[in-house]
Amino acid sequence: MIAGSAGSRRVGVGAALAVGALLVIGGCAAGQDAQTAEESPVVDGVSANVGDIALRAVAVAPPQNNSHPKGGDATLQLVIVNGGGSDDQLTGVSTLAATQVRIFANQQAASPGSPTTISRVNLPAGLAVPFGYSPDQPVIQLHDLTEQLFPAQTIQLTFQFGKAGMVTFTAAVHLAPGPSTTPREDVRPTEN
Image (cartoon, rainbow, N blue to C red):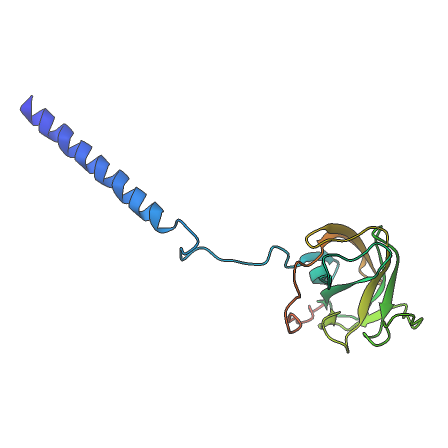
């Protein structure tokens, strides 16, 4: 009987040590200073795919004030990647959040009152085409917003492509200005 008691105590002590070790290890990961804690923006942009076309980092540019006003304009920031073996074209964008979506060759063409819209943007095979990050890039403008848009608010967008077809998804308004450089996406055309 004494041997049984000693064996039970050893098992009990071993179990207590195991539980204690788990609590200590678990406590190491608690709090904001833990090695596994990472801070990242709430809105990084979303991704969508249709055919050989990949849309990456799609978001409404952050407002300069607290929001984009109803009746005002907002631009989209994104990268469109044509991962296919043949060229395609962006032929249109639509949303219920604006009465019209305009596409411009660059930011200068998108200046207030400018009627110089384009009907399509070429998307060469195997290349990424950025929109709205720098003055020389194409611009997609949500014109005459139907509602006030606040940071982190989402809207539904539909993109139409000449070959790949159509894709509808939800994107958000950026909380703060995006990266100082255009996001990069390295692609290689797929072989047919």
